[in-house]
Image (cartoon, rainbow, N blue to C red; front, top):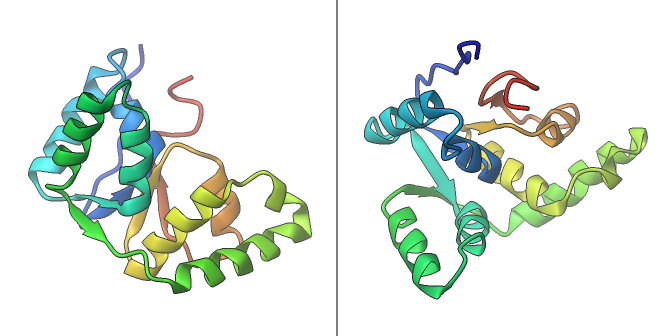
Length: 149
């Protein structure tokens, strides 16, 4: 397997739910090592929506509580009420190309939280490319698109 090209983080970044999932995939131990080093350096941020999504993936209450407890240790960026109106505007901006039907509202809100907090969003999801095309979202792929397929 070819070596993965991982982003260099100069400052803390919000990690999308998909990025969290990939860094725990046992097929890519180098992702876990890189992610764990980023966590230890204080470079991994969460928002409430990412916490909700990651907790939802738990198979039972015990695991859900354990995940929520671990995530509580991370710095959380705010999700102010204005994110809703911003998400609606971005969605309408994407309607020009028909992309408004491709991007789930969750991704719009996570992107909006990153933009409002002035942090980069780390992801492995083409939806964020679509969002960035009509917004001020700063984003970086966890690894190049297609590298994990």
